[in-house]
Image (cartoon, rainbow, N blue to C red; front, side, top):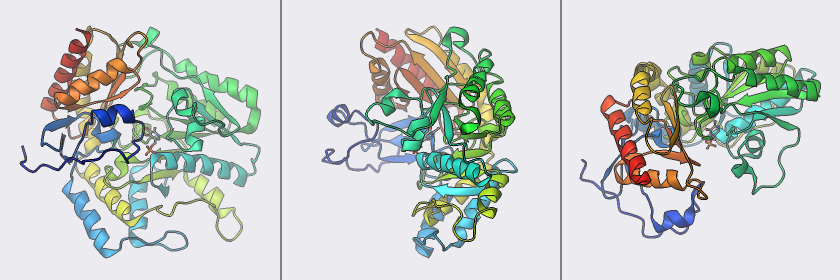
Amino acid sequence: MDEITTPRPNDLEAFWMPFTANRAFKAAPRLLARAQGMLYYTPEGREIIDGTAGLWCCNAGHGRREITEAIQKQAAVMDFAPTFMMGHPIVFQAASRVAEITPSGLDYVFFTNSGSESVDTALKIALAYQRARGQSQRVRLIGRERGYHGVGFGGMSVGGLGNNRKQFGAFLPYVDHLPHTHAPEHNAFSRGLPKWGAHLADALENLVALHGDTIAAVIVEPVAGSAGVLIPPEGYLQRLREICTKHDILLIFDEVITGFGRLGTMFGTERFGVMPDLITMAKGLTNAAVPMGAVAVKNEIYHTVVDKAPEGIELFHGYTYSGHPLAAAAAIAAIDIYRREDLPARARAMEPYFEDALHSLKGLPNVIDLRNFGLVAGIELAPRPGKPTDRAVRILQRCFDAGVLIRTTADIIALSPPLIIEKPHIDRIFTTLAEAIRAEAA
Ligand SMILES: Cc1ncc(COP(=O)(O)O)c(C=O)c1O
């Protein structure tokens, strides 16, 4: 283990931590100070295996030299230049690189700084497209129960997580939701895609019957991550695509976590063989080394919005940091690693071993479901009576103490390790988890 340690901060108060129980955390902090490869290190130098690629982000593992050097080089060449009515070379290169790895036909790329911004951007592009093609009655956006699309007002509105909505009053009007696809009564302990539930996509027909030709777009995560690893039933996404096509509705895949090899292909769309009209991405785009998101759109969407507009600005949307030079440099370097090392194929090759390791947890106390696809796993626990989330958080603490980072949402544990993971890491992660689950039941 490396000798170097990083000093602990001596005051934790000022930082209002996101999606965190601030009071509990500040009373008993869990700090990560350095990272390399599959490992984090605490300020004291203790090793923690990264079972979550940070937050579904660092697919190529931590501290990749090529990415660090690309960022350093770009910072020295040019720190920042605007992309509003100006351009800089590296942002065009980054967009071309992204377009090379998105499915053919989705060749135009709008840059953002996060998944939330990508989602709001995709929703706005969908609305602008419908208007540009003379379908301005199509103002309705359809999300899905238990969907997570970030925390902007657009993403929260199409999102389907009650906790993320209840503090914030009103949302976008003209939004409706499909039912979620989580059906443990039919699909518990599925390996890969669950068999039951393709017909749940037919609920979109009901929404079309209700809303007529006012629907602009449907947005779903191919595999829902943050809501607790909900794997789509076999045939579900195909069915959704068919219904969208039949009724001339855009289909947006939110690939913020499923992109960049996570499901064993560069994007989930390839693994499922279903082509959306727009793809949102972030996180793995730069291996999380610099914040960046993007939306890839079908060529026809770009051409309709841009070519049909009167002279001048065609889309009144953008962020100061859309295509920030440092992020663009990081994205090019990260994509080059994904391709050179063929990390999607690596994830695919590791999937059976990861799946077997996950399902070895079957029969442990309070484990009520196990599910997986690509290098994503969900472990659902029976909540402690009257104390939801408590069991999972206590297991997270036990794992952290034993040197493994996991993620929990409600009483579901989610695993999404870097795609460079080796079998001994998988063994360590699941052995540690099994011990923590048993100890928590004792
Ligand atoms: C599917 C999906 N969309 C959007 C987001 C939001 O991304 P960000 O936190 O970068 O805004 C996330 C984050 O986990 C996500 O999983």
